[in-house]
Image (cartoon, rainbow, N blue to C red):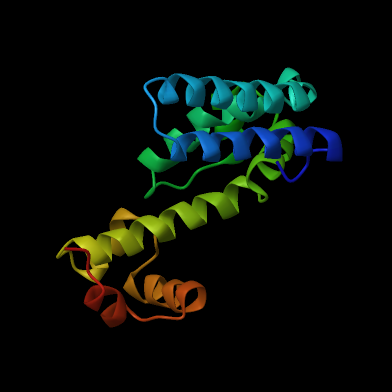
Length: 164
């Protein structure tokens, strides 16, 4: 909505205000009218973003790469292998990753590893060494260092904030 031009923005705002008024009024057909107003908002937004939607992006091909990364956190991944999974050249893969995620595959993979390690520390009784092994860190000291750098916390703090 923030990218809309003034005229379409006024139209969307008017439709949303009509939805608010209608939701506050009693009546048997209220849900029908609300649904229609919502559909009008959706159509208006789709028309305004048709140029964005019409352009095919390679990001859908990255889904398989990201799934592969998530399933192989303890492995050492090579860009060439990831490019083959996405049926792209290495340079196209790097460009697509930067456009989609704002970073390259290596940095994205490192953040996946670290996020998964933190999740394991918060939700399991695995030792720090086992978590480090499962998530591809060199050892538990390397994991401790990365957690301190990225979360400004230590393992004890993460364990204390366990999810029920």
